[in-house]
Image (cartoon, rainbow, N blue to C red):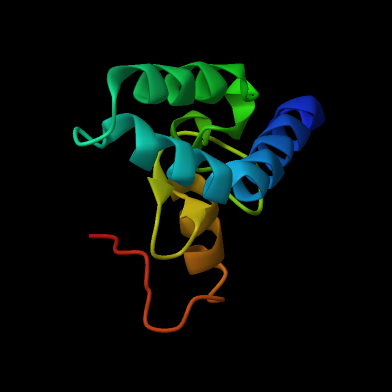
Length: 101
């Protein structure tokens, strides 16, 4: 089980990223538009830099929904490999059997 503080920090990042997504997209569009004057593009970059760092989507990290583990994450199931194995062994995932030979 991951630390509760790390899980809560990740949730906070998700909320901030969702809150500022539209503003970031608008500012990035202005900053990347080559038709606009350089001063206007530079101002957009400065405004983008003043936004909270944790509101950037690149700072988000996938975590297991059951344990909060950040590594070995299966996107399709949204759980880690360890949680997947435990659920599979318990027969709680349809169509999944733990192989043994």
